Length: 311
Image (cartoon, rainbow, N blue to C red; front, top):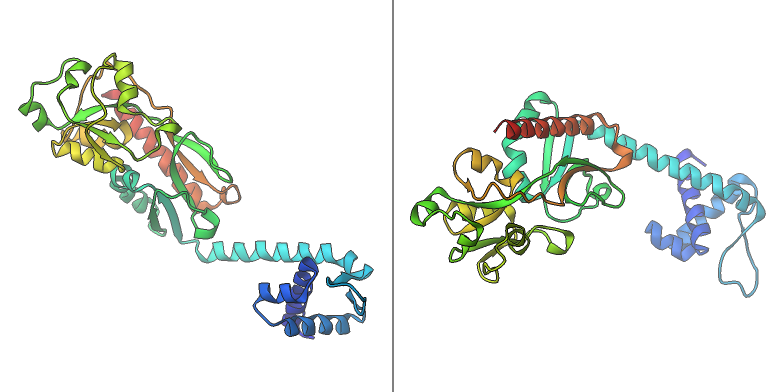
């Protein structure tokens, strides 16, 4: 029996032992039960010893021989190590590709305006950006690293805090020219409020009700207004003069710096309980491309914070 035949026969044996059935093993391996039985018999002939008890009346499940029971853990361990080796080969084959997942809003307002600096520093890496609000399965989707917004806990992923943020009202300069500038939070009465619905408030996401309570203006009506489920679109609506938005400082920073938006009531401090985290699988922590991107993100975040402190 050749090496490939040995491998196929061992796989058929392991699957049959795990399922205690040739039919179930065949379904898993996408072959016929007869093919699985033939592979197991060929392995028995090559080894010179039976692997399953046959002819046992009344038994519907396969029963391993004592020799097979002793050998099975090592065979399973071998397949597990083989899977790890194949995974490492896949990682090597995609060493020049970095797959990153972020939300569409974070991509538009923070990452994409800065990404050229990473590409200039690491020209040998091709970045594949998966802009999605879904909580992706990193292993299944081949994702190397991501940035997620939340409380910092995602099962199966390492999470390192990247950016904290404040929440505050913003509007366009044009809106201020059309209306008298509100001097107190209570002056927001009569202005359209733009609500960010991109994150569930039950997770601690800041809402107009929470901000107004902190600002001592609970009598401002919040039931009406424009509701949008994308933070970048919330800011764009404010830039277009459609109302006053409750902005996240990370998203709004560049628009404020460019004069497209104006911050209102800077004396009211409202830090968010949520933050941005770099996330990745623990087994990928030492991949050079992941380390390069993570370290670059941290440098960019530190530079942004230093600029904010100076202003």
